[in-house]
Length: 418
Image 1: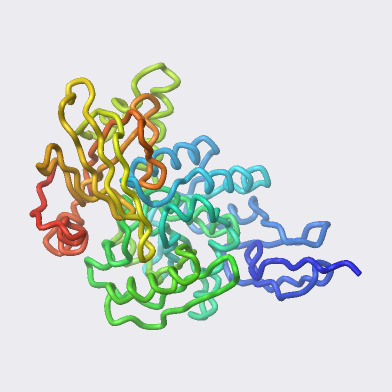
Image 2: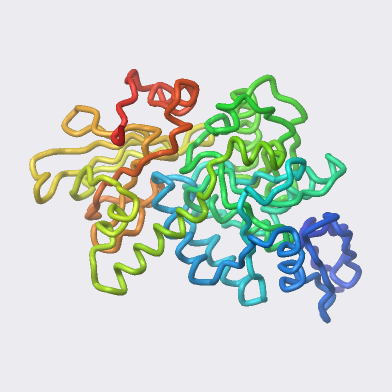
């Protein structure tokens, strides 16, 4: 007797009851945005064209991203990630596969949202190193959004990534591939940060619950209420650690008014612009790192070779220090980059040379590709660059949550872009 094959609990935008393949039934999970149809083989499929049409009726400013723009987004977001947010490569592979099946992501400006629209804010939570082994999955990414929609009893009008850095920048697009929701051209970090309270929403004092996370085993956790943003982080981190140090999340839902007032607007566009600068320089035979610095008004902090890596996963975070021995004009000097998922503080010969919330990124000297804290390795020739962070992060309230002291460094923030 053949053993029945079991499908995931959530597939292509609906909650699938646990039955064998022949008897699998789809229960639609969303009241708006996602358009799910049945394929000849009985599996659900996403009707991309019809869903895009729904999004366009929402706003005339909606636009489809081309496959090239998705590639640029991944490259640019990896640079904005400050070494964190997760390597976007595997998420990019997912989106290439979805594009081959007809998915065309639709991006809308925050200004097109109605004030009472509900926006899902999504991310992967956990240690980036674990993400190199437990690969992203659009079905899992969409599961917390489905659960929160059912919990709230109303549909989401759009989806937004929590952070524009790394793989998390593509999390909203993976959710969109399963739900048909448009993606908002915004996030709430303007880069990547390791903890849930390190957002412009927390800086503004917005409500931090309910919050949902899900893993590949179909475990689902809802935090109905948390005393503070820090408590939300602590509760979520414990749950994430228990399920293997990585999970898909949907943070506290935001209204259209809250997105317009407190999100970092245009961050998807910024990431695409950075990625396009890298691609254009490569195609023209120019220096891609110089192209990024010119595009964003960035700074070159250091050039060298990775001489040592200290890296460990503790309590759901990847922590450590990258040591870079100087080359060229920096020969004879050493830079040490301390990180907690993302690079937080850079020391040149023992003196602070850059610090959070400014975006400190290590890139391959030849290709301009960002190197995450989980993949940077001994012997790589690299350049350390700095990009300006959003001004909202540099306020007194912002620095309390994302400044160097939030990462355990007794330093006053010294902006590189006054």
